[in-house]
Length: 422
Image (tube, rainbow, N blue to C red; front, side, top):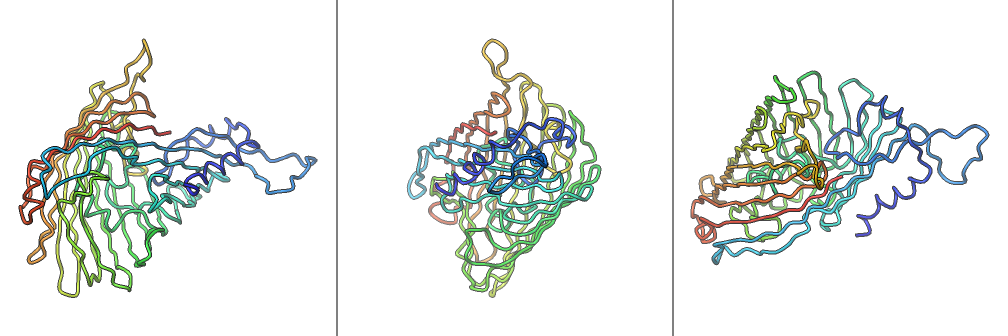
């Protein structure tokens, strides 16, 4: 907890000497962009003190400096049905995320972000990076950050139309989630490309290194229509200690019920991921999908796994996700209601969503299981900061390759989330 409060304490120390700088922000053109940074209330910019001003005894802030404070609160409640032994799940409430972030911009060309999560004691540091944007359309970031792979993974958890990412993410996030490294983004017109070289995450003691890249083209990018096409690839070598790897899903973040489970996988030499992604938005309707292949090379041979999802959303109020698409980062932000919830004025907006996902961790003698899951959701957006998500998921099919998977067929999961993001 003491680490999670560090950004807030830093902000409180810096806030008093800061003054409003509306003209500077207007000239800059936008709030703080960059890899997975959320907009927050602008604290202002510090002005250079006059020459005859008394110099402070401590550190001095130099202009221009823009500072933002942001955060997110994701509170979940879940209930399983038909979870008969041995496929028994833990139900209840879960503080999924409780993050505070301090970010900003220095001298226009430098951007920074520090985000810590009080709800994750195993990895409280989420983002901690410095980014240079002095070249037109090019940004270079160094620090702990997201790797450029997968539309779903790069989309902020604040902006997803479901409580959680699909089960196919279990295959992706095992190798290309947040890590320490250097990332280069480039965008021009309707093209976006990103690549990076990374070690392990901050809480990872096993070492290893990898690289990942993502290329996106948006032939259509309007306020009501968007076409998004992408390709991605990643390569990773585990640490020299040869610690076994494990790939498995979980029905909810805190259920402790894993339907597919490949591992521990010993003697892994390298892992290669690749696959396409696509999205289409026409007015209030959006369609999207991803496919990932993973080749895992071990001392005993190479295993190939795959995973995918397809999905759709419909905004009942007529809002379009195309308006929330950023060609400069190749991702979607969350839906923003045309009329925010206010007594006697607006009721916010509703969105319905559907997703079908699959993961296959079987290859020859290696049997990690196969699972297919259907998810239906209804989301209420009170305003751009507050929303409530209701999800129902059913495991529609498994390969019955062990007792848990055989018992999990037809299992239902009901989840509700209250979300605050600023």
